[in-house]
Structure formats: C-alpha cells, structure tokens
Amino acid sequence: MEAAKPAMFYNRMEDLKVHCYLCPHNCTINPGRFGVCRARKNIDGDLHSLNYGKISSIALDPIEKKPLYRFKGGSKILSIGTFGCNLKCSFCQNWVIAHDEPKLYDVTSEDIVNKAKELVPKGNIGIAYTYNEPSVWYEFVYDTAVLARKEGLSNVLVTNGFIGKEALLTLLPYIDAMNIDVKAYTASFYKDICGGVLKNVKETVEIAAKKCHVEVTTLIIPTLNDGLEEISQLAKWLSTISKDIPLHLSRYFPNYKVQDIPPTPKETLYKAREEAQKYLDYVYLGNV
Image (cartoon, rainbow, N blue to C red):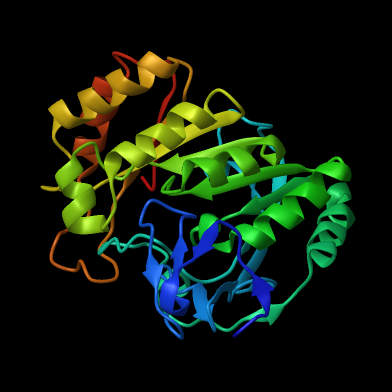
C-alpha cells in the first residue's frame, strides 16, 4: 500500500522526523512510522500519502444518504472512500474501512471523474468523498475535486471536520457541499471517546458554512451525548451561524468497540428533535 505520492502540509525536522499539520493532531512522525490516521508515512524523512489512488468503496448513492437533504434533492452522487481516519471513535459505524484493512483498488483522479461523467444520465451530479474520513485522503481528494470542478461536477465532503485550517481553506474553493459530523457538544466526549478536539470541529463548521452548503450530523448515543441540555447547546450554537443549517440527529446502533449500549430509543430522538427545533429551521431524524 505504499504509494510514492508526496504528502502536503508537513515540514521536515531534525533526525529525519517530519511534522504533519494536515489535521490538529500535528503528528511528529519518526522515519518508517505512521501518523495517527494510518494513511501517512515518513519514508526517509519525507511524508507520503499511502492511500493516494486507493479506493475501498464506490457506489452511486442518493444525495440524501450522505445525508444532504437540502442540496440538490432527488439527485444521485458517485460516492468513493479509501481507508484511514484521524479520530478513534469507539462506536464507529464504518470501522471496517476506517480502522481495519479493507481490500483496495487502484484508480486515478481521471478514472473517477470519467466514471462520474458517465453516470450523469443516471442522475449523478458529481463526486462524494465519504465512507471513511476524506481529509486523510487529502491529496487524492484535492486532485480529483479540482478536475471534477473543471468538468462541471459537484464535489461533496462527508467529514468529521477534524482538519487543519490551512488544509481546509485550500480545499474549500472546490467543494460545493459538506456534511460535517459533530460527534457531541462536550470537550470530554471528543477527548475520551474520539481522541479529538471539539473546538477544531466547531471551527471547521463555522468556516465551511461561509464557503459552501453545510449540513451537520450528530449520532445520538444513550448516556453519552443524548441529554436535552447538550442538544440544546448544539442547536443554539448552530443557530448563531445560521438557523438554516440542517441538523441530522441519527439513531445509534451497537458497533465496533461499543456493544454494551443498546440502540437509541426512538422517543429519545423525538425529544431531541423537538429541542433542536426551538433554534433551527431544519432538523431531521436518521436511522429510524
């Protein structure tokens, strides 16, 4: 899986170490070692992307499956993913490709864009970078998005939002819509359960909402992030950006390392939606 594609957003350090600043982890990576995401490796003092041109999943999906409910509704989008993630959510719903070693296929950006164009008669509007975390596939996503834009196709990111500001601002001119996971609205949840930082994700939402269409998804997990006060705080914050940002409250099912918490009761979701609707114009329920 070692592609010879030089990575973006890193600096060389002494003793052949590298500093990666693609995401807020700011990994310092020794020679022969990987970043937290498993998708970037220090090879002889230079950082390389290991998943460039490697796909694990490809499908023509309804745009609503991303989920995007207020962006080109009724259309379809060619959806692609690779491997790797820069968060470690113990409840991951896509862990097989995010944290395991899925079977991979070699493609080029031209292959993907040509496939997307072929599917336009079937309702395809463009390309969604999804399934695993697209920011750790940055170089391939960037190259493909630039090419897709030239061909008049839409680019969609389905992301955890845990990305460095410079990398985000470099990519955003080519992105038409994003669905950003806000896993919870407490710093402790991000730190203890995801291995991330809430404030970085909030910054991504705030920046992206000024540049493209943004919708937000929160997976509601019993006892961990399902309190009405937390839902209220999340919705209030989003409303300060725009009351028009759609919020998707999604039902959790046991997965990956979390098997001891039962599925979210539907009543919990109904109450959460009612609370969020006090502040936001568009609140949807998922997986119900």
